[in-house]
Length: 551
Image 1: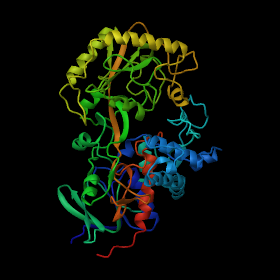
Image 2: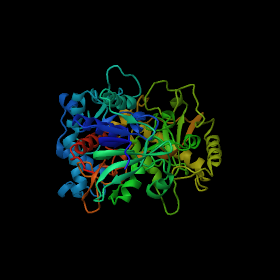
Image 3: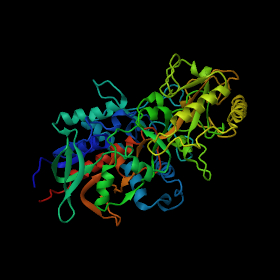
Image 4: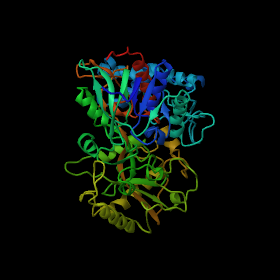
């Protein structure tokens, strides 16, 4: 057999999990080769917010903060497996493997980040608050309101390597890329791995590569680690496997689920395929970009504004607008019989919000004053706004998205304008009282901190009456996924497992290409990258400790 490349550890992908795996394997004294399908390294991590959620990290402890193990595990279990979680049960009600993954993350997370720091591959800091947090250290966790979250400050870290300037995701990945470059570790871009090579006993000893139409092979003397991201750009998989109607993704275009296909052929156990990390996006922007939405101005991570609401096709509020994006976006998934009333939602705000001048990182689809992107609708009256929304919906019909469409039933109900008037009247009464009796908007420290600037004169910073006169603004929102998080099941050491729990020899996985240790959960800001870095590092270290495979 002809080998074009060889290394002790072959790592497939070059995003956050892959780079952490590479650093770990190099630190073990092994030779490493990274194979990246895209034209440049970094993956989806490089275009992300660059935050990573690490419980009980050494930086928060240095600030005098504690993060007790039992409480942190309860928080993660509740968010990851809400239909199984029982604080009084063995393993908190979870299957043992799922519980063990949570404990492995807590037990190893801080040490992994410390080791990456000591090596000079990361330069972490606690993400500071943006000005409205109860704590001087950081903004509260997304799920600060849960009783299990006894340590809601300081878990979210960022990376600030000296001499580097740029987007936070770039700073995270480039920091590790520079570390690898300094040690002459090759990262071969434009190399899509299409299969693995095995010995007769099933041991994985290399990979098959497509490089500009030519077939190449790379030998892995010890192990192969896959960290190739999810399948958000594979429409067939999205439609067949994801549970929600999804209009787009923020992941890089190379994410087509290659490892899911490869590992399935090897007999790997598969899990968590129906879950992802969700957010809301402009449906019109998704249409213009063929579902690949990376423009932050078209993404509603936060529903900006104190007089901003979300309504469905009936003109009624359908969710607490200030919930974390992963939770809020799942309100689109509601099905009532054959009706999907929230398939698309309409974010509506008034002139006061439109003219709010504060530079705020989470304005999202609400542009700064003086700007009006094409996906923002403006009208002088509520009736005119409804007519303009309907016209935009009609223009979107017939186009297919990641796993959804603006179907004929996604139209404004005849009662939309009347109901919208009633909805605004009711909301305004809540705003004047400072209590949202319908969705409890503003009841948590997270919601109030992420509100940003506010005109409220009550204790609830998230609500102010909507103006009785126009102009009004709207954006058509749909659910999207930052990436999927299902695939082959792995153990705490990163080994890919078969249904009987045995490991496929020589094969490891980490990141969004595997069944996420977080299950359904998104633990906080950086809830994707925290597990990616930690389990990527562990997979790389354990792969490097594999014995050499005799061929």
